[in-house]
Image (cartoon, rainbow, N blue to C red; front, side, top):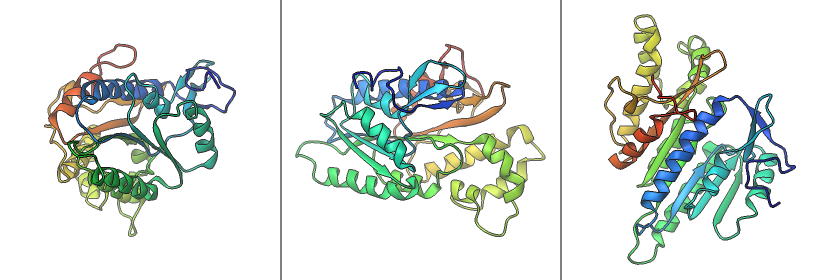
Length: 292
């Protein structure tokens, strides 16, 4: 139990992922550190971390022995912890294991939910709104960060909209480039709603794809991400201008053959959040400068 929160084998099940997971979680860890270090002393009624696809809390890189902290434990063990944590996973086993690992921390509010993240988000949003409604006199609204990192295309736009209903809600969103690429041709002409339609929240992504997939095939994802971000702007998130510069490019995670797997889309309603993110994505876990 003493090593539940340490990056080492604690006797509980540990899932294996590709080496690219380290880069992704490096960006998350760096942003959490900047977010909490800079904002913790202000008069927020609560500072909440939301992880809708939390997993077991630890992972190994495939074919390696080293153990690393997953997103929930990175957030829980940061130097300046959040005041409230919300963890969701679709599998009871994952939540049971994560609960055991988190049990060593008893003085912080932690909520665990089992089920579809796109449904459980309602419970979390309602609780945060309740915290805000009952906040002590003289305090501000809550400050929140949601890490939305499914294995594929499970995240639905309606979930983004619900989280966006919270006034101060930063988002780090998994954009499954490889998953989308595999399914574009299967779904672009589908008569019924598809998993990609639910990810983008409408059918208009099909127009973007059809416009660029032949004319600019290497940039089709860039145009689709721009479309996704334009929808975020409609919900109060700060607009990020599309320029060819590392400062506004979503970091890409690649497999061992250097093929792109997924990207991280960042969204904040305040310019300061984007200033933090620009610093975070400048270098990956190996210290290499990131490019589009």
